Image (tube, rainbow, N blue to C red):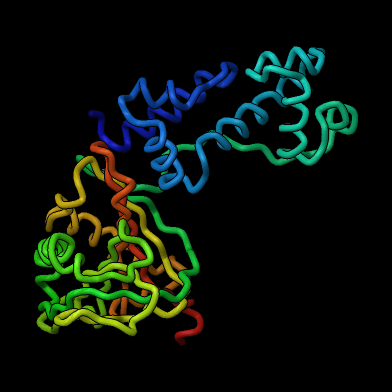
Length: 299
């Protein structure tokens, strides 16, 4: 099995090399010994867009070269880039650029093209890849889980073990989950030193009216957050201290960067999210969400 970043780079290269072919996602997945569904989920997770939509946009963008630089008729261009019918190409072209290829050839209007994707803003590890963050709005949600007080310096080492214990045991006591496949580990009052962090491995729930004995609820209020994304060549249960250290180091680099517009509020609260449906024996995925505030408003 090739490493996550090598796999994604290979997929992107394969698409570019086959830009004029009728690219089949299921055949692309089969070539790399991965399920079609998982390939689509992985691509969406890594690049925030569907692989099918990306392939279509790249084909249409590449076809502009023939549209403007050659005298090919529209049907020839459509066939050249893997569209079975001229009408199919024209409809896709209009959705992409807001006009038809014939009209665009006449008017010479400037249109925005989809450039080839590359893995630039990411940190590569031996068996994982950590993407530079994006900004998202996280809606309010409720969770129920097993509360722990962990000394700040021990969070990276203990949190993964406590998460597995919760998933295998206490999770089964919670009956009102909104999604039984989603795991959320929420930390409050994070302290890197001798202070204590409140750690809650949990699952999302409809409400917090009924809390099983020995468990605790929490509510994450709607917040503007920085979202970091991680893809690893291992199972979720293998998210150990060493791998967490790699991720935390990247987050701290962002935290201390003077060039960034936003300040991370991870000393107050942050959470990690895993959807176990995203794993099929190949690559796991995890998201880290940290509330943010513009530095200019903190002065």
